[in-house]
Image (tube, rainbow, N blue to C red; front, side):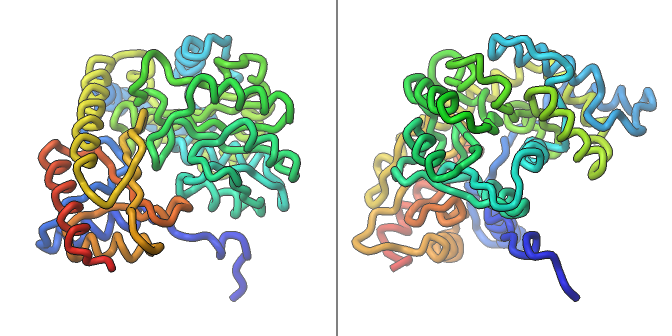
Length: 389
């Protein structure tokens, strides 16, 4: 039987693979600490749970409009109008089955076979696979920096790049573009005219002052060529509810809506009402509590890692990841390193090769204080023993 070339060439999600492997070993009785998780380790806020129950009791369990219920789209428009000091309307918004689905929809509208797309490196594992699925070509900055800069955009555009995916705070590094960097990125976007999909799913997990720097705040006039992607997964511990949002110019949204109408029909009705509750601000106390815990855990894991010989890292300013480099005399295969660390050291991590970087590993601090402390202890012991050499 013949299978289509592009989907057949897609790679599986390494983050899900290593998370599942660690969970399987733990379920089988092995002593495993896992820092693989890409999701908050908190319960979904009570307001979301109650809204979902109410929706079911009221019979709101049938098809919804394909682009999402009007109340949620309006709430999204209102909330992010305030965030970006813009006037977004319902026509600028669309609800999808998670932020990943939102990105896939928006990419499909603008990427034709052969189009070059600039991606950050390290990148979230799904970015290059999404581009490949559409027949696009992923291009990476040649500067070697972990965050895309204005000059990266200018050089990429000169080589034929038509658009980019931007991610700050970044998964996997937790790094954030400074306001000065963002201003230059915005200037480069204006100069080149490229389209931008800004993956803002970690925007509420920023440990600096005020709101995280953003392209549209640096240059509001770019709104027609920038699509914002966000959702409730990371901010409100609602990863399994699968609700994400796209905010963009009406034409981009309208075409993406057609794609969604012919694929999923609509996002889950019950999940939409749960998301509506938190977007309207009914879970802010729990959101702030989760944020405070992540900020404290960031300080905890960084303080412990600073005492571990054989690694170096930049302190994350957002998300819930730290991305240390393993310092060795010769290059290492981080996939083999992480497998050995799991099997011999009892610690689950994600290899940097999954994100396009050999020599690094991703540690999630979406875990308890005790697990974080024990995980760093196991990493230190594993490095001292040299089990990976």
